[in-house]
Length: 174
Image (cartoon, rainbow, N blue to C red; front, side, top):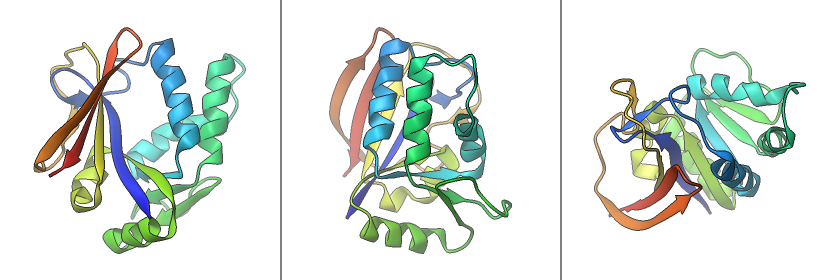
């Protein structure tokens, strides 16, 4: 049975914004290894459309970016959307009864499945097994909060510095 893990970068004031801050080389290497080890990823439409950047080669990429793209392309993806008609390679569309579909995926897949997108995570809070906050020393001031819905009661499990500018905080529902 798979574990559902909600993991995103977050500012000190609680927002997710991939344009306001990015990973240093050590954190990027961590993400390459993390993505390569996942059994798959579950995306909301907006996050999936952002991540589609990795579907096509870009000549300016360095080796780390090419490695991330290879890992991302290889993993199965499930995309929750009522507005998309189709999705890219190695992806399946979930357009109705999301909770039942995710329960089925969790039962059929072994390993960790990452949930990406605050709105999607808020709707699946009862199914999430672990929360990973990659905390960055940046204050954004506004935007999309990491917790887009009610904050579930959580138990602190670990703190791990990664690189020089981020700490991964791990929590599990109580």
